[in-house]
Amino acid sequence: MILTDIGDMSAVDNRDLSAAIEAARQPLQAPAMPPADLRVRLRTSAHLRRVLPTGLVVRRAVAKGRAEWGNPAQRRHALASMNAILGGTERADEIEARARRRLIEEEVQRALYWQPWPTSKVSATSAANLELALSANRPVLISVCHLGPYFLQMSAVTSLGHSPFAVAAPWFFEDPTPDYWGRRLARWWSGIAKRNERLVSSVGAFPVLSALLEQGEKVVIYFDMPGGTRTDFLGKPVMLSSGSAKLAFNAQALVLALRARRAGDRVWSDVFTPLDAHDFADADGLHRALAAVHERSILELPETMEDPNRAGAWENGATEHEWARRAPHEQAPSSPQPGTETPALGTS
Image 1 (cartoon, rainbow, N blue to C red):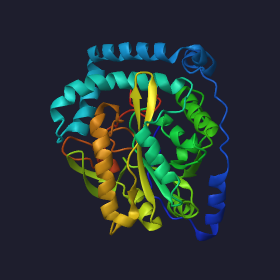
Image 2: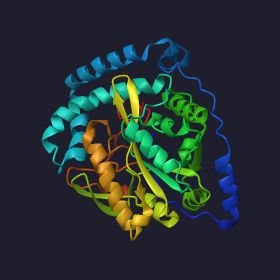
Image 3: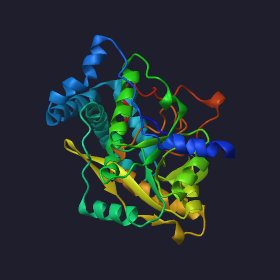
Image 4: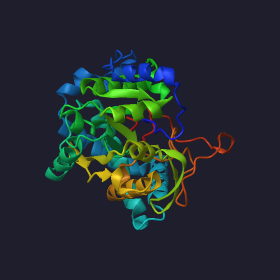
């Protein structure tokens, strides 16, 4: 699932700001699961998945992922993804080994997506970092990447009684289509609605999110999205959105970097030491510090990062030398859209 960042969002008219904030505060109403052919319904059945032990489902996915290395197309895709992520880093010599693991993680993440969504586990250190940020009576911006089973990562926050506001592209609010992709979208809505999360449309989101931070709400922004800020990231120049840092600096917020991590059939939310906007002279400095936190996190588990060349991200503009989203007329066909049958992390 691609949730967008806020670097290029248009400003909302002041007279509409109050209405936009009020709309964002409304509890989510999940759409009904759309119809689909029998094969898709069986693969995506909540009733069936509830009776399948998650441990068994994960073991089968691991075996399937290992076997995918023998598929030339899947192998090429995995190698290309890992080359873009690890090229230029100290782990570049691990590209092939990590590509093998990537195919496993793709299958496991796809399997976990359709299983019941549990509350992610947190270590004592992560729990302490959550407590430090969430009890500080300060604005809090939660910064995440498309890493691991990220559809479960916010459960560590919602289980403590908070309802974070995430940013979603306009297509996320469209009616689910009667196919696999539509049922996947409806599944995501169902999961976050049960956790009492909130959504803000990316159109005109910056002032809405600013106001929500000022009002003490928790805001979630995906950091690994293309934008106009050249950043040294993952051993190469990467054009990233800097909207997260601008929002946090303007609000003088705490910034809580968080990631999802799988261990066996369990998912953990790793919460890193909060960054404090008070400690930075400007938003650029905060952006660089946040990039360093996410870089360390990604390099620990690079095979679990979504393909940066997927549709909606850098769209074949991410190489081992740089990540720069090309102009539309320069783009080659990008990685398949989420929900297609071609594996891509986070697109179960």
